[in-house]
Length: 422
Image (cartoon, rainbow, N blue to C red; front, side, top):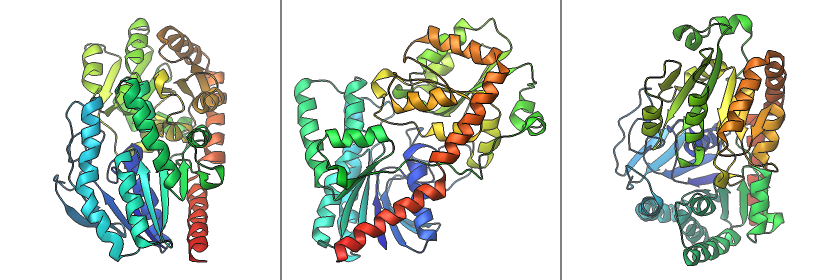
């Protein structure tokens, strides 16, 4: 198959949508498919173009660049990246990429791809993907993969405001969603939201994010004793490590963690390892300055991820209430694969709440008192931690194995291509 992937984020971004889009395209290329990508230079999660962690990488510039990455032909298009993203600046940011990428996108008409996959967010790009599919004719299938309901999240989190603006945006969104031949999303709740927005169930597909179960595996007692992170920070079995890893922005609600850390400041046995990048990192660093048991780190390199995740006794996954079921955090999958329990904040009835209740404990969003209570509960009950950790690994193996997920996607792609050619 000839597959064109079109989206704002791509490898070598180390977390979030860029990570998954990169792995998806590479996997398909390794299966013998011709894959091209139109994307932006890496900028997330630091919100500036260039290297996104301390791992060495090429010095990307914010301009048009062609390159080949692991058998995939990649066209980079420049964009405007705000230093402090707000509702309005995010919209301008998305629009800048949609405009700069339009000429290279439409030039792919000459290639005649079998499938054009547009990855949301960057919903401004969806009309361009539909236009290209239309120019190529009925044999080219349009596919929208929703990683994040960006419009819903923007209004629920207060990044955008105004009833008239929301009605206008939702009308545009509904028409766009319904125009794609196939639409997928990463959780069952998000697929059901697609149905609520008018997409026919027969044209939707559950396509969860995934985890490499070979790369991330639970470490036993002897391996944990030699874990380089635990050794570096001088940690032993008397310490309980609470770990947060990933992007640091408004959706995470990291201010809850600050309150929890302050309320448990008299517990030297609790050690907090917080790694990530994003707009909220500076305020988190300021709020925890001088706390000896709190360590802020940059995002950790991919090749050290198994040791990093296994340094935890408990993983932390705070979420704001407005983000519930608008996105299933991808960082959850590595947590599950590491065989360590998770403390998450999400309303009862959401998919995140159901998963985290099995693999750990779940509390209501933006409730630092309850969050702190379950931190103490898990910290003081080793048997409960171990039982929840075993269940976490089982869930990762059952639902989020990389090859199983991508093989199902490949079969669905082939199905729509065959139907178009018939």
